[in-house]
Length: 163
Image (tube, rainbow, N blue to C red):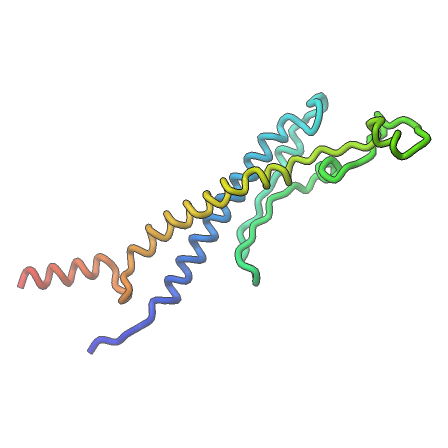
């Protein structure tokens, strides 16, 4: 007598694995784009060492209460200073007013990370979709709704045909 067993846990695992792979692929795609842009430095490129570009990291994918998460960032302090803004002591001049200070080049800010993320949002979504779809089609097609693999179904068919 045949017994029924739910294949839902396996299908859920396949879906989570597929989404995780998609999010990881998108994270690496974003990190590569930011790193390539940072190779030129934040401004003139005169003092570029490649330190910030080489420090771009992607964390492993984590499953959180909100879904799936990956972090892309840098642990270099001065990258944060450029992104949020800082007072450049080499170009800042003593001025009488705040407006003169900001217009004199004393305060500098060059955002790269956030604008790239906004520009790439659709592209990253497509990467997640494409990667997850490919994984699901590759894994889910191996198991039927009844929990039998294609090879098991073929073997049963061979037995029926040979008899």
